[in-house]
Image 1 (spheres, rainbow, N blue to C red):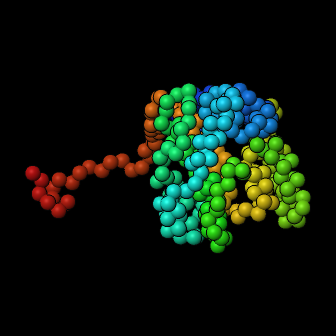
Image 2 (image 1 turned 180 degrees about the vertical axis):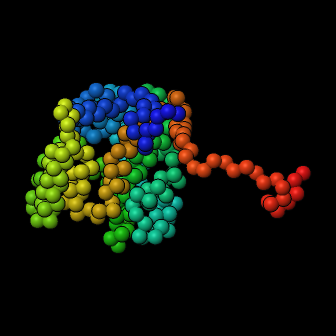
Image 3 (image 1 turned 135 degrees about the vertical axis):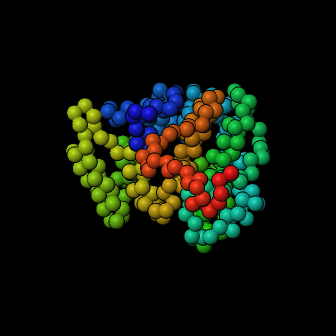
Length: 271
């Protein structure tokens, strides 16, 4: 071990065909499709593209929609567990507690190109997370549990115009957005280098959007997870065939090992 990469920064541990970040050009693509094109596509088409590598046909698109709707409703024990958690629990900790014990029983069939239980179970989790977040928000507000509705389910450069529109009507939100834009501009001036421009991460402006929508600040990370779960699932499925745990090592820099005292100083006689 002659090189130390602190925080595993820059260490390549696998290959992916799902997402590509071109930081120098400020471009992001999924499955080779630019994010600017994807934001104009229906949500389930993008989710299917992430998971299976191509857009679904009309029949394929309808089936996952019905599958997700069938699995949105919280099971009885899930509602009981939510009710048992302290109301002060952070929303992301609520998800950490509930997701591992979700009821993964299949309520509706889903025809897939691969007969993979992990795909179905991952989609069940993806379907349930919005219901968990909504239920937790309503509990914190002292409201009744949400009623699931079957009628109702972008990156920084595309999210910024949305933030401007939503924040314009509220003075506090507009002040927050102006601060964020000033920080982004200052960071770009100071940290960008020739041939390498600095661009804001998507969460930078998502927070302003969520604030303008009236969401509490501690719900932001849970909202991020709710939106990103399909990407998590796609990467998990992609890495599944190798099934290798990542085992980083650390270089020991502490005191050298001490010689054992076998002369009786340790409280006993040597054998």
